[in-house]
Length: 138
Image (cartoon, rainbow, N blue to C red; front, side, top):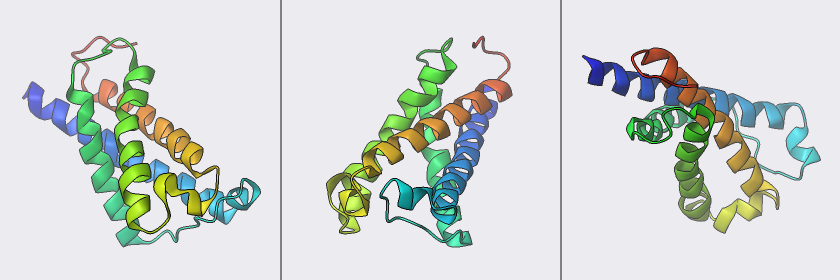
């Protein structure tokens, strides 16, 4: 049962982190922060868009199952978030014709993706730690 709890904790943390990340990018567009920092990406907060991001968020955070930095929750979450950031910047955005790193959305887009994904990864890592109480984490 320990493995089921660990998988569930990592996936759920990632899915909820995906929800947080989605809210953050949507909110940035809604309140004008995206315009302020020169980002043209302003997604609509729709169920299909959110569902996809939460499922992928959960799948990506299965990386938390890798036993590295068990006592460094923040670093673990940040490290796990680098992989989905790379996927978005190097595969997803170019496939959307937004250029490598999503620069067609704005010059600050790579930093926005990395920063918001750090928040997502840290949230997911803390969720994972909280649900997998048999592990010693800081």
